[in-house]
Length: 475
Ligand SMILES: *[C@@H]1O[C@H](CO)[C@@H](O)[C@H](O)[C@H]1NC(C)=O
Ligand SMILES: *[C@@H]1O[C@H](CO)[C@@H](O)[C@H](O)[C@H]1NC(C)=O
Ligand SMILES: *[C@@H]1O[C@H](CO)[C@@H](O)[C@H](O)[C@H]1NC(C)=O
Ligand SMILES: *[C@@H]1O[C@H](CO)[C@@H](O)[C@H](O)[C@H]1NC(C)=O
Ligand SMILES: *[C@@H]1O[C@H](CO)[C@@H](O)[C@H](O)[C@H]1NC(C)=O
Image 1 (cartoon, rainbow, N blue to C red):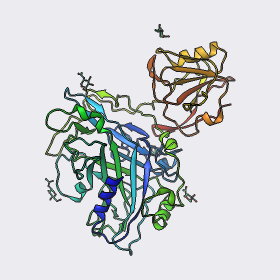
Image 2: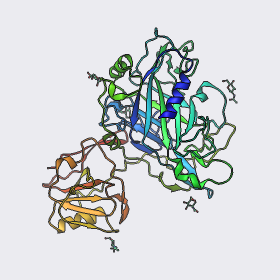
Image 3: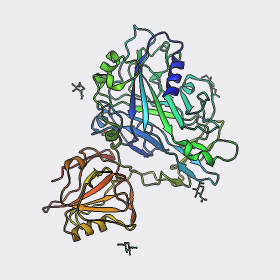
Image 4: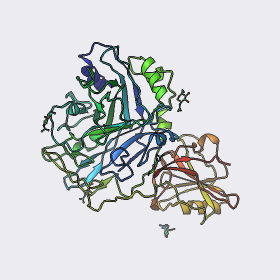
């Protein structure tokens, strides 16, 4: 926090105006996959993105799609925007790539910065979207666009750098993207997703250039990567991280913003919420949710490829291109190019066993179990074997947890039930079949015997290739 404030205050040094702001935490990504509805609408994106925000997210989106969200991984209910950046991987000496974990999802700053008090800062209009940064860059040229992209080495005394630092960052490596705040006043988007906006003369402050008469609230992303996990795996004489588009320099970092705000709520906040410390809860126009609720907002991935753990090559067609010349787009390398059915975290047993998936419930530690009947645990657990076990013991609800555990009962308390609209993070592979999901840590995949001839899994609303879950209440 200290480091980012120093950064912001540094950027502010030339401005005399007091700056109010608010800090919007996004507790987790909603999905990590090759999707980019701004740059590659309706298609599989060329490279991996780590995506935060509303679960209306899909491969093709308009403002209505954002508003169809039933939850967001960011804290303010009135914001159903999506925010994304490329994913960071570790490149091993043997040429493989390992996904780097994250702390939280992202922190999005909304800064009420203006050149003069005569300027009225605007909220983004419905349908507005933009991109900052350029994935093809592999060297540094001192333009405003490149000044807007940098890396903070947390826990080190070093200043922020424009490319990846070549020393370890004890508390993580933070990607930072400052977006343009000047608008041409008419286009919600342009073919390059950039020409409708511009930076003010001083990047974060100063006058807007001619042709850009409207000024928006400024947005700034921070995304923290757990690079210390790889601290003792450096080799050779350069740093080992690459961005998902095959960028070992870090200059190609970029950010995408797709507006999903209730515009009048954001405008009210810009006009009236003046907390100088960025405290979100201080703004009366916002309804906030806890990080736990936000983090349980998920979208199933829809591309059939491995993206986490260690992979032989970066997902998509992204050979590492060192530069310094601009990188070139590659294709036809055999990577998937089709959007598949969303990979929902359940098995359809409605026909085979007359059991339906009712959602992902909670089973907090240190308290009585959610399902208190029979239980078993083994390294050969599957959804089918758990349901069979519960049936054999005379129960009609089966729950799977932590890959290996099966619990049974005929009811459970309401406060453990799946939350309507939240897909939740039941995502651990079953110990006996890694293609099936068996709950998570303190999360339980729940299946229930159908009582009549109609037998349906939890109702799923499809929004252009991805989905949200509107869970049934348990009976
Ligand atoms: C879904 O995608 C189609 C085109 O594929 C588009 O016309 C439609 O507006 C999209 N719907 C939403 C809600 O984004
Ligand atoms: C390559 O190195 C990584 C990281 O050290 C390791 O996890 C992986 O198993 C290695 N793969 C091969 C094929 O040697
Ligand atoms: C660097 O930026 C300047 C100013 O925008 C531009 O004229 C020049 O062509 C750029 N150089 C490179 C190598 O991109
Ligand atoms: C936006 O928020 C205002 C204030 O809460 C509410 O009255 C209005 O219905 C919302 N608009 C939309 C489109 O949801
Ligand atoms: C695991 O389950 C499968 C399928 O039910 C069965 O074929 C196999 O024998 C089991 N293995 C063990 C070690 O129980």
